[in-house]
Length: 164
Image (cartoon, rainbow, N blue to C red; front, side, top):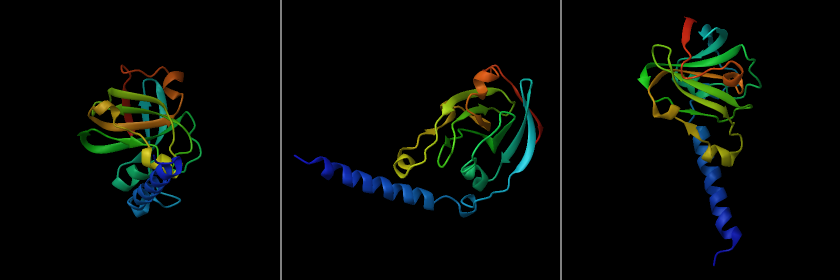
């Protein structure tokens, strides 16, 4: 019978290796301390938000990594060219988020509330990826956890892009 150490040590080593490989495969420009995002404005129901716009692969990979906070009147919007399943992971996040997926017409297709960050090497390996319920989306909005409940955002909510 294998001892606890004989089982846990290989698992820990594997987790660290996979985590390191994962971090090394992140595009180089998304690892920088500062990544420049353009700014835009959207309206979600009757709430106006200033958003950082992530529209390139590197920007979408970087997302809100390493940022310390996000006020309720701000967010980050991820934009893709065609509607698709858009996965979101919480690698190197510093705070939990509410995440909302929208179709090309601004209709909510999925909401994930209070998504927790993944910060340790082991969490990097097991960090959950939320794929928006497997539904097709063109936009994903990340906002501070609690936003959806505070402003009563539902699948009947509508996003209007003012500028991005």
